[in-house]
Image 1 (cartoon, one colour):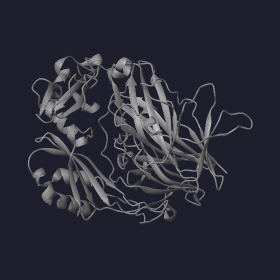
Image 2 (cartoon, one colour):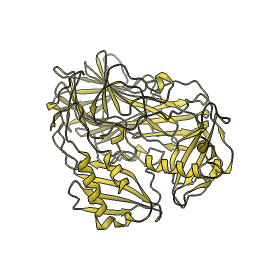
Image 3 (cartoon, one colour):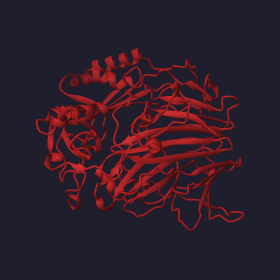
Image 4 (cartoon, helix red, strand yellow):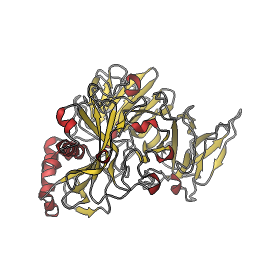
Amino acid sequence: MEKLQAALSGWRTVNPKGLPLIRSVQQAVPVRGTGVRSGMFFILSEQELRECARRLWELPALRWLHRGRFNILAATLEHTIRYEPGCLGAPDRLRLVIYHYDENRGYTIEADYPKLREVRLSPIDGQPDYFCETEFQEAVQILAADPKYGEPLRKGVAFCSPGMPPVITDAAAPSVWGRFDAIPPYKPKHRWVSVLMHFYSDAQQAGSVGVFLVDMTAQRVAAHGTAGSDFYPASCGGVIPNESCPPNATGNAWQAIAWPAQQPIWQFMARRPRGSNTDGQQYGAGVEIADVFYRGRLVLKRAGMPVLNVFYDGDTCGAYRDWLQEETCFQCSGADLGNGFRWASARPTTLCDTLSDGGNFRGVAIYEDGDELVLLSECKAGWYRYITGWRFHREGLIKPFFQYGYTDSGCVCFGRLHNGYWRLHFALDGIGEMVVEESQGGRPPRWNPLRIEARRLRWPQRNLRWRLRKIPTGLTAEIVPGARDGFFETYETGEGDLWFLKARDAEMMGTPRAFANLTQYVDGERIDNEDIVVWYGIHLRKRGGDSFECPPLGPEIRLTE
């Protein structure tokens, strides 16, 4: 019962500024001491969520949870009904992913919310690759209790962080047996959680890291990883992970934001990374935005980064599907707006600024930077740290941005390619009636239409640009690639740089493994006078052992009439 209550408590909505309940972003009100307007679409109290947990616990279909060990790996509230742009009602369905260790099986629970009249329990085939903080902490306790390998934790000379991948679901291919990250050459029959052990700077083994695979079903350290070999060197300039991080601020809901507070130019809904693993985005999408208005005109329906991966040269540390819903700390002081948003009184700093993996806040920082409003958050996936966010310029520019850093791990000594893909669902003056055009520059540029779904490459020599144009009104969004956004490399690590697709709600995250496979969505549909989604990819090549840097990546989206 306690685990169920704890999982649902993350939905609790706090309202420190006493913001009004609204139905539309246009109803957001100025927030004293900040430069924005804001408002709450709904409020969920602790008492309401405790009652929901109690009713779930007492359902006959879930009585089996009363026996044995389990964890709730994911808990999401979702919206079935789509309202007018800029409007949002209360959530009307919930979804839980549960793993029962005694049964050695995962389940999904779906129900209407808040009445819980229609509850569906479904077993999961295979090992679910969802994970949660509670399960990781239990894995650390199992490791600490191990007579041989838990001694550094018991002595207080070491600490742990999640491994990569956090859950072992597949076997390593025979060609990469014995690779650095210690993925076993066989598919585990039980649930294995990956745990990294780090040593404090004054410990005898400082500068090394252990990779432990903890069998959660049998409650023991598996005979693989460091349990079958030695500790690995953790070098190549990684930042030491920092455990002094406050817990997450509560609330995952969409929040209304309008800027500037007087006569707003930009109005939109935003959601923190921790709440972005819904609606088909299992791995999160970073800082998400939706129903974006510029000077009263709708320009984007929804945008985020649902696909993120890394490929190591020669499979030395494998290929991973990373995630963008796990928030980590950065430094941000200011006034809390609720739902994990904070108005920053000074420019926030992240690992990329300070080379420190710590701070005083988890969530989304909002601040003004000259003529721009900035939304920023820092996420983590294993030993990587990802800074994600958006810039909104007064003159009609939207700039999604992404930065990358890392903490101690021997894997960062190897060459690798990081790929991230934004999904941009455009809605220029409303859904549909748009065309896509391509140009190689020139004065004036010559724009050629793309009439069928397409995958495109950013050739370094061709200076390509793309734009979407609303046929009836002429409102245009031009996509200008960033100078350091990189280029497609091989078909084994990614298939392209941009994809122009007819919008489909089911096409949200590619293949749920490392290889994105976005080209599967290019199936010959017309994009002439249609509702259009653009996937925009960034590629960061690291040689391994090179200098620590966090170049800002991302395009400009220029709005014109």
